Image (cartoon, rainbow, N blue to C red; front, side, top):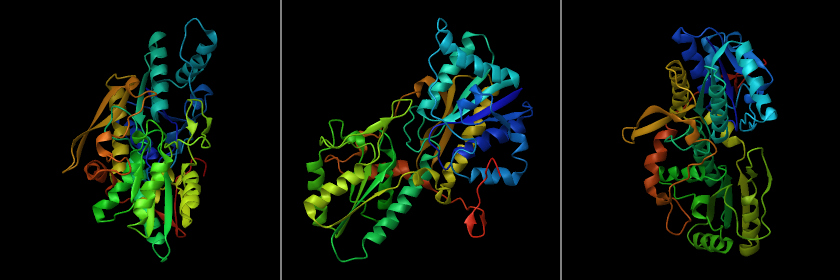
Length: 408
């Protein structure tokens, strides 16, 4: 049979390693003839926009470069399929287009690399194919820097993002301490409604770094983030440190009326950015010292020069395991990791019904948030540290890392 692979949602530094893992196992297994890539996620399947990956990945060098390249080389989308209703011809039209693409290219298995919303697509497409009697397998391969997919211990892409955040945070700390004046630096970190990535900045404590002095994750503030309490926390730290460093999740929502989130995507996710800038203004008003806000923005998910070797290797492995699952007859499943131990770090790859992760979120554990809600406990280090180990050395040309591009 032939297979098709697509990538969806927000990019990561490891999502192409999963693509490489699917591709390599498909080539090696001897049971797959042609391997297609769907351009811009499920949209490519709807519009029959496929590329032959065998004609693009022509050497071991190409595959190696692909694994070290951030973002989605096939492009991405945030496209929400309507739920299939046999009585609604409009909702079925898209599914019929997808089936037309699958059958036109004799595709027997479709692999969707993505997060919560992508698993929604996996579930819906699998259910439709079963309903109309099509023996085509659909397998979800996890990814997201948010680390918020239920069913898996962690997600591909998270370890590299955490490594980047910790490294960048440490450099910000060094920079903030060069002057004798009092200062406050507030760093905004991605993570829609889950604070995993923000919390991971605590790994600097493993090397004896006290900063970030305050860490705020949305799970601690289900009733709203009390700005007055935040200002009191900052004041307390200013009495101990000349340069106060704060890590705050983009998902933290201040309880003051003038702070409003705006915009939403097809899945209803609001635009979360801006909390650090808001808190910068409030600190300036209250303390009158030098205050700076820094939004790490997309650099958290596209910085392959600081990728975790563990993350890249695991991302490749989980992609390969997805092929094995499909060849074994599985469908409507998502691959994932089960952690066996922290020291030594050991995991196994599992799979489960993709519906368990579709449109659902796994939140940062309350047990790892301090009682005053302003920090992360040391117990969390055992979870985070194994995921950021090892370095991936980029290939350089003219002093600049080389990336694999679909259209050279």
